[in-house]
Length: 354
View 1 (cartoon, helix red, strand yellow):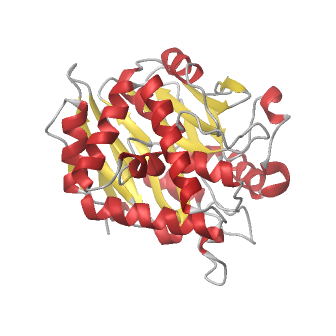
View 2 (view 1 turned 90 degrees about the vertical axis):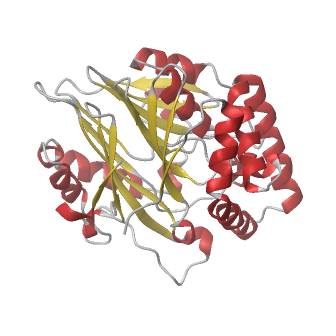
């Protein structure tokens, strides 16, 4: 099985959003319904969720007006209110506001070899009832830059790559400074990095310019460098690769200052197990073939680090986690390579090139 794809024909933000919303109308409505169920299961009332969605729109309009226009266009195309699409884009912020915790999540590996392009792979874990939310979206800007992103229906971006030679991986974090006062959605930071940045330094500047209420790490990769940009209301830090060109990240802060407010230390200790698994398998993660790098990620709990997650169907929906996708960036081609599912299901034939 593969993920659905969509290529925009419009470059104006509102028109592009409307086209996207119209084409993916049913999927966006289903994604909104899935998140509504998740928020309710975690104890959030509908009126409060709407208020958070509206705050997210206000923050977006102040920080990136064209993206607010695009969200309005998506809502018009999908037959929804703008605040509802705001909720989809601000789901990380709403989950932080609810203070929801769990034991899934993502692992990212980037290796910069001495010769050749970066070698990357990431698992993307999420709630199993939202496994049909992802879509692959391609759009072109007026400048001619083409962006390809693995995202969720109605969300402006997540993991992606551009024809400008830059790509991003994406992992959620939790920090003591996370707040219910919803700020700029972190998914919109990833979107602006994909749209505007041509270097790691430019990506860091964009991240620092946003007032956020939730934490995440956006690992930016170019042909000449990389950094994991750790973002939280307490500040932004850029983690460079080790001297051997290896950059690994799971779901805990690596910056010493930000790590003082780390939330995963007691709530999701599996993130440290997964990091140890990556560190112990750098050789395999450095391989030239994406399929081999993905198989190196393979590990199930309790035998080892739970890098490849499968849902426990005895748990409520807010505590069921699944590795929904395994993804690599092909920077020279400006393409994503995506496998639907976790590393335990990977074969040479299961990769979707987009």
